[in-house]
Image (cartoon, rainbow, N blue to C red; front, side):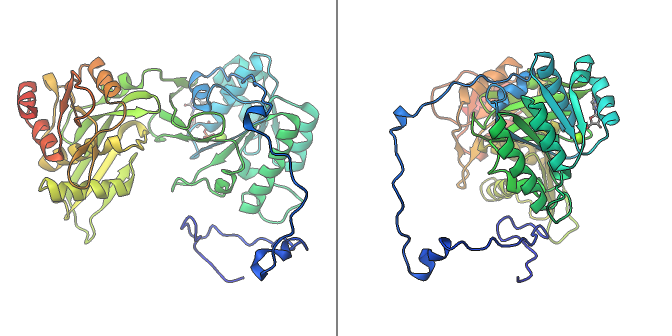
Amino acid sequence: MAWTGQCPDCREWNTLVEQAAPRPTPKASGKAGNGRALSPGAPGGAVRLREVQTSRVERLSTGIGELDRVLGGGIVPGSLILLGGSPGIGKSTLTGMATANLQSAGIETLYVSAEESAAQVRMRAERLGPAALEVRALAESSLETVLGTIESEKPAVCVIDSIQTMHSSELSGAPGSVGQVREAANALAEQAKRLGVAVILVGHVTKEGSLAGPRVLEHLVDCVLHFEGERERTWRTLRAVKNRFGATSEVGVFEMRSGGLTEVLDPSARFVEEATGAQGSVVLASMEGTRPVLVEVQALVSPSELEIPRRVVNGIDRNRLSMILAVLARHARLGLGTADVFVNVVGGVRVDEPGADLAVALAVASAQRGEPVTGPDGRPLACFGELGLTGDLRYVAHADRRVAEAAKFGLAPVIGPPGGERLAGLAPCSSVRQALKVAFSGNQAGREEAAA
Ligand code: TYD
Ligand code: MG
């Protein structure tokens, strides 16, 4: 095999491992590659989808509203869920709380800890409350032993913490290697489906954000959840990036406290309370799934000493920032070619939507000018909207709900794109230039005048 350092798919270095190629079966050798066609087999029975039998499954509630919502209404029995997140983010805490709730609702659970000793798991459970101590735990990293235990205990929900530390003696390769992880997950998936056990695989994510190794698991599982946040801060967001049983747009917000994770039912209130209204800070009226959430976007601009100035982002896409800076340079005469630019979404929240563009642009402009942008009565300024390459401000979905959310916290009028119905509380701007003019016009009267 030729030496290859970089994965041609995901562009990661040193992630490739050598695996024995499967022996070609006689059937496979007759593939189109050597010019011969496959001979057709006996026909299968195709049915009209209307006639396909389905069964309504009862979902298992984890007792954690935000988790259930992200899952699409609870855990589907027999399903396979991958919960990814960086070390220390709270994966064991979340799964510990979920199993505790399930167990006290009379649903049998099994918590397999391949990383921590049973005593360590117990110590965490003590912080989570008495229900957590009723969960059956197994401190074991041998795949065979775990499979045997699931077979004999037949829990309804089983947590494997973590899939990277599981290993099989029948396979070569170190624990955590792609081959081992894939094999372990395959064996657990097969058993889960056969016994109807819902399995939550906990997976560690590297700094770059990819599930180290378990990237290969994403197609195997029914649901991929990402648990994110800044370690130093207490906010955590949970989102589904794949869900065969629900939408992938829902986001759950949590706060890590001394007794475990608490659900944040009104994230906007928390984020707005923290928003400073200082220079380089604006409030983004964003949509997290079906829910409007106000988040603070901060920017810092400083002269660069590097030939290629730095573009550092947290919570937004780096390429998106490059695009926004180019639009600002071209259409608002705001050149930042010799400055380092840092953009951060406060609270460790990630905003993956085009509606965040204007907030980034205004935060950067405010930082660059050293001038705060404030809304009515000196409150933080709220905005949303997508930037087009021509400098236009484009319509994004749910404008009405974004404006209503901002108004609820006294942040109207909101700077946003025109279009759709005329909304009270919206200061519509058709271009980034107009938005900047309105944003820096200081007070509400000036804003309304500039928008007119
Ligand atoms: P943990 O769930 O062990 O993270 P992971 O499994 O993702 O690596 O929790 C990590 C942090 O959470 C740890 O630093 C301690 C903190 N923590 C609390 O603040 N309160 C709690 O009640 C618990 C259980 C943990
Ligand atoms: Mg853990």
